[in-house]
Length: 359
DNA sequence: CAATCGTGGCT
DNA sequence: TAGCCAAGATT
Image 1 (tube, rainbow, N blue to C red):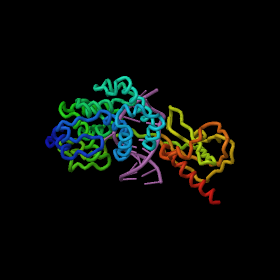
Image 2: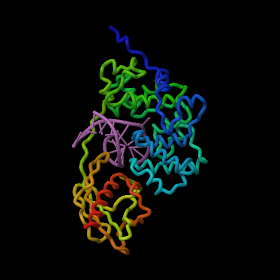
Image 3: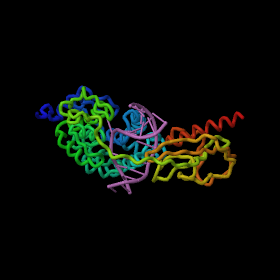
């Protein structure tokens, strides 16, 4: 009895599937347009790929539209003020991406004459562009036959080849498998095709093997273990940290905010002054005032810890100088410029301050 | 190289 | 509800 039934996976079969099922995405040149000679804009490819790092298509769409409307070219983005770019990125997460995005735009504008490098090595040298993004831009924007390996590709390769080595140890093995399948022609379409397949068919939980162009070539499917792959090394449990956030509203409606340090959590973003976040935070009000605990805490979960923030609010007369932070005038302050955890704090504080007005 | 770094949707 | 997951990069 030979395991006869297993085909060899072919790039051509996946490309044929992609020609029929490619999603219509704001940053994508469709396979039809590409065949007709339409060339992708490297700026848009780069921007979308950075936004898509560890982030879903659904979450990225509106941000991509907003950014490309505000800044149609890399030169426009390079010329934008830091605070505006950080504010527009607010809510998307992984804020080092936004800081590196600006750095990268300015290097491309000033040192490359506004044109992105065309090689994987050249791209890799830019801030915020790692192995995946360099290969993806090279393949998608320039149709170079680079090996593009993201989480989707890892999952698809682990299944097609029934690779049971747990991630991240399996990475070299999966990359080798991906390299073996990558075609010389239509590299950009192929890269997007594997990722589309992973996102829409070869999904993490319940893969739709029945409609998969590689069903007949999938070793995991043949073994009935497709939904179990890829294996992953177990994650550490998240500890809970506590903190205190201070929301000061001046008489004229301005709020006291600070720009967080460049490095570390929420680096470069606006935030409420507060205590350190740990097991037993010390109070650290940014000024002397009649601070009132609002009696409700903001809960938020980051990548590696849970956070419970006690919220204290105060109304401050004009002319009181804070120890740290700056007052943002009512007209200049947009809650949407805050990272999500800080926006949660604002929403709760706002409710409490409003009640205070009534009473 | 293991840890750090967000958020929202889904199960 | 609590954990898992997403087109990773950086140190």
